[in-house]
Amino acid sequence: MTVAILAGVLALVVSLLSQLAMRPILLRRAVVDTPNHRSMHVTPTIRGGGIGVALAVAVGLGTAAVLLHSLPLWIVAAVSIVNAAIGAVEDVRGLPVRVRFGLQVVLGLVATWVLVVSMAASFWWIPLGIVALVAYTNIANFMDGVNGISSMHGTVVGGFYAGLGAVAGLPGVTAAGLVVAAAFLGFLPWNLARRRMFLGDVGSYLLGGSLVAVAIYAAFSGISFVALIGPVLVYVADTGTTIIARWRRGEPLHEAHRSHVYQRLAAGGLGHLGSTAVVSVATLATGLLGVVVATGAWPFQVFAVLGILLVLAVYLCLPRLLGRRPRL
Image (cartoon, rainbow, N blue to C red; front, side, top):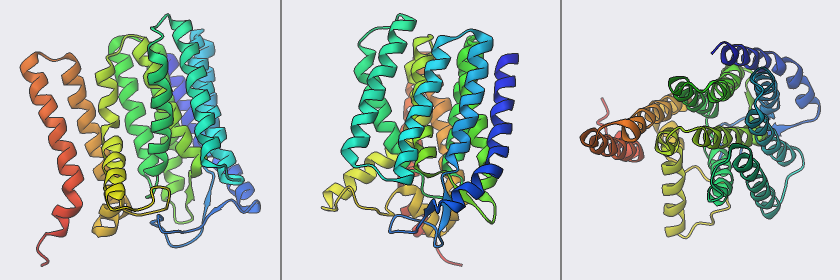
């Protein structure tokens, strides 16, 4: 636990302070997010702050890997940073969709294969690892549309994984989750400040890649897969239902839009922070209920599954429910 705390503190400090150096560099290079049809902001804003968060993740995970003599932690760090690098190129130069997809498939294949070999896991995990990395990287990117949401997601889910690792007595998993949580927490003040910064694709790709890498590492270490997927179900449900709804309406899936549940919540009166709070609370709820499903006795498991479905249903219907509130 001492190593995990040390690594987490380092990640937090690096994430907070690195933006002091990153902001003027990004400003000089005109790395700016210009509002479009998907955007919830109205003024051009510096993006690319995820570079500092990636540096924090690298420092934190590298420190933990050295102190714990852990090869899997080096792999988690490598997956996180390489995925962030793909996002950084997208921020600066842009990448065709097929190229991004291909790079993520290769990264998922190599990373999962190395973890399977180094941790003596089943090779059947490899296709699942590829799908998870590609899917959740893009889900995290789609969900990065209001202030604070990605930073809070990294903090909540990373902290949740750290807690699972601590309960299971797995210092490596604890350190990995805590580093991710601390690194994204450190960016939150910069994202919410008046002269705010955005993570950019480098940050959202880092978020998706790091959480998937930590989850796979945790699963190979013996933590229940069911418990690990609990806290990501809100992001999956929001993105999945939005894609299906847009496909049914005949809308081009590759075009920018503002039809995600969290975007409709923000536009419908909750604002950026309100929407972020709703998503974070729902994420924590499904995560805790997922633990009950994974570890509880069967009657409690049934109620926990029903609870997860209820949380997701309420979340998905919330924009419509709030829209029907009587005006005073």
